[in-house]
Each structure stands twice: as C-alpha cells, then as structure tokens.
Image (cartoon, rainbow, N blue to C red; front, side):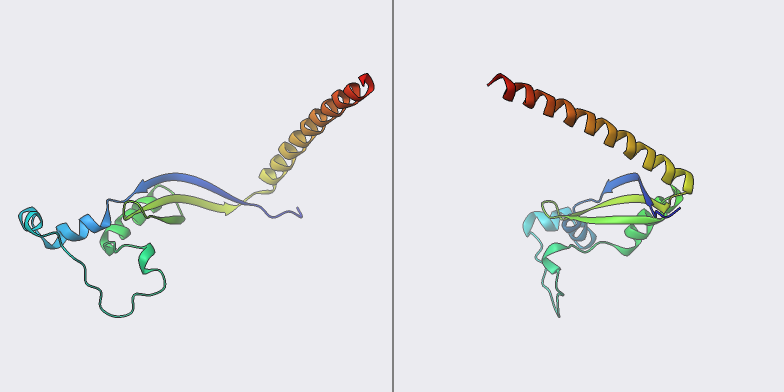
Length: 134
C-alpha cells in the first residue's frame, strides 16, 4: 500500500487539581492560609514558558501516566488550563494503520466524495433552473 496512516485513539482525559492550591496545601495548613495567603517567590531563570505552566508533583504525574499506560495508552497529550492552573491530560493509543484499515478509510472517503459530488450536482441543477427562469 502506498499510503501511510497513523491511527490516534483517545482513551481518556483527566484534569489535574488546581496546582497552585496543591502546592499551598503541601506546605501550609488551612489555618496558616486563612491568616496569610501564600506567595511564591521565584529564584533563578524561569525559562521561556514560566507564565504558561504550574509545578506538578512528579509522583502525581508518574501515577497518572502509569494509569494511562495500564489502560493501553502509549502517548499522552498535555495541555495547560490557564484559568485554573491545572493540566488537561489525554491518554492516547497511537499506531500505524494496517493495510485493511487504510483500504477501509480510502473506501469511506470515496463514498463521502461521491455523495459530495451528487450534492453539488443538485445545487448546480437548481442554480441552472433559477437562471433559466430569469
């Protein structure tokens, strides 16, 4: 088969907790936070994307990734949710399509193309009728 196709199947999605709150709870009690909201001081180079990310515990990330892997995922998409300082993680199974799957996809596209052409023919016929009536 001359065509190469990669199949991408979404297996699940999670959104992490708000990472700023997780961070605060790791170091301060509720009572301490009631009196004074924690402030984060940054030391050293913050990198290029420091305003588009939040720290997440390595163990939490490993646990999530292991769970995805157990569910059959071999890739993950990670998006940052700027409104909530959280991450959206999608478990994905990605693989090369088989020749049979490629044939099925080409057949499906062929059927879609046929119906699109038929619809366009009907539209053109209608336009032609309207022009003839003028």
